[in-house]
Image (tube, rainbow, N blue to C red; front, side):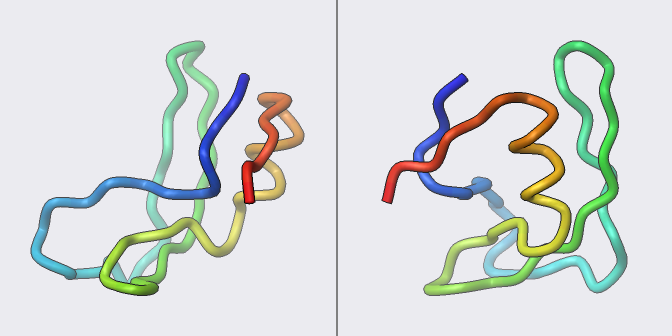
Amino acid sequence: MYVNRLFVHHSMLNTCPSDPVLVRSAGNRKWVVRMEVLDHELYITTGWSRIKEEMSITDDF
């Protein structure tokens, strides 16, 4: 699987959840992650490496 950076689109006008967020994949895998707003976009900051490893995702920098 290929993902452009670690971007996650968020449409809540630059709000960021303060609590951990549950992310689910199409295959019903689940991960708890933390998110941060960087450059007016929401990014997964904690937990991303585990998702990349389990889903065999590569980043494009």
